[in-house]
Length: 168
Image 1 (cartoon, one colour):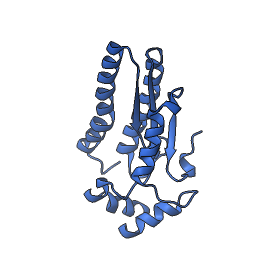
Image 2: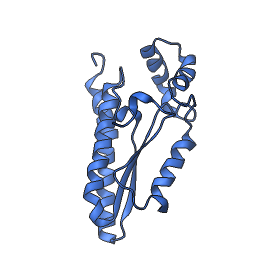
Image 3: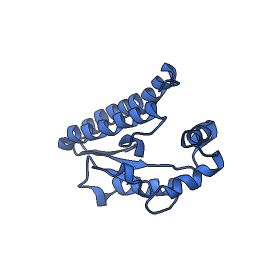
Image 4: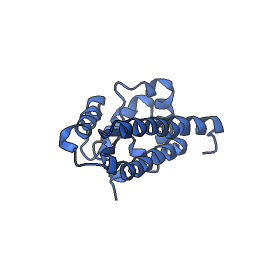
């Protein structure tokens, strides 16, 4: 936290907090006007419920995002608006976030080399697997589809089983 700048803090809150707020507000306005309901799916993070070392700004913003989804699930129910979340972790392959110094920063926080991060993340999961973008997409597709038509306010973890982030 001591090295986190106000600019970094605000960027996290603006994108992950305000961004979801603005998108949700407009979706609610549109769907209420149309009277057809709708489905919002937030891409939260394992860090929404897990205290990530060296990631206070990100984790706090993701926690706010997850709680907003739960609040909006309650607000939207009477209008047929469902709000759910997926909580991925360590999606390294296919993610641009790792190209911006994040990989080096996370590796340093764990006391390992950047090229060891992928294996580190795999080994800390209960299932000993990597998580890929398509795994997240499958969870989103389920929540958006008819099989989840009776589901709102839910959070699905897609993290290979990070025990520290199991929902309590």
